[in-house]
Length: 483
Ligand SMILES: [Cu+2]
Image (cartoon, rainbow, N blue to C red; front, side, top):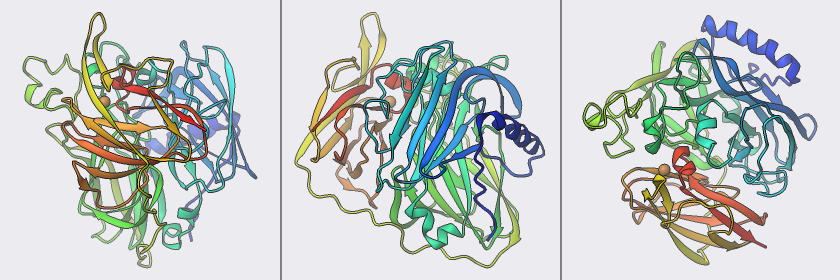
């Protein structure tokens, strides 16, 4: 088998040299590069991570953006269940920040996935946690999570993949597949600098006009004719939704946010909201040639963000570059290469168990309104986020159902930290297949019922809308898990 997993373990000092090499290969578009990878050695992943505001390569040019270790996306971190992860973090930004490990089942306290920490400019902090031995394998990620600054810092470029390699990677058909990571992220540049300000679209959720894949515009991916390509896709955008379709190819879904589903599910397209991940198998079963990965139109704001009203009272420019309500965009191109022996799809993956009935049901309402002196605020159960007392208190080792009702006029992707959940139903219609999720879309007018087992870790954490402007504008609440 070809060396599809070339894990490079690098110190940060050699990372820039590798990055330079990657840029050269980017310019000749030989094959899309991924970020520098840092993998665990023995049972320790020890990484130096520095957030800075400086010149980086983006979309084929140089621009001043926010980045981790000068790379966009940030270095890809890889660990195994049972590994200890130590991140020696330095904040070289002109403002405070912190780190969130999106999707990981680790403590929300101390120096683990603690979103209440604040790392001041110039300060360093060591994050350290151990992945449980039974942690699912999957596609996770890290990004800043300091309330009030999250949207701007993620929009400026801060995000990276965090991969847990395990059971799913050992299934023979999946091992035989080529692997490609896809980090979807939109950017707005103003004279080659991140454009943080002047976004009248903040209330809707800011979007940029540059749709990058791994920091590039329309990169090329290859698939062996007859072979399998495993796409591991993250939506790391602040607000933009992606409705993904690969020309003339069905998508075989094998994993969602929390890892493997029970067996592959054939789909013609996938909607990926901010924070969500999917893993897809593609079969190289078409005529050799080039096929586009498309972002199809989707309206997440009920016509407020362009489309209908784009040239009208809102003014297209004033609202910024809104969602693709009218046209499709090309994100990447898939090119066939040498024929290989025809590879089969896996039949079975890793079973997602049916959860027992919930011991308690709660209802959450998502909406927005105007607050005196604050303008628009985004609310959960009528309240904007306030640091302090928990809004919801649950007992460790219990299972709860949360009915999340979106009574507003925009879609909101709902995200819960620390514990994964299963979506039970949407408007009382059962989900077509079971999956572990940490982020799920609640469309305007919809009621989504999720079932959450609270396991292993007591402490305070949060749930929120993953349109990060909505989170910063109040659509977040504190959850306390009591031992
Ligand atoms: Cu929202």
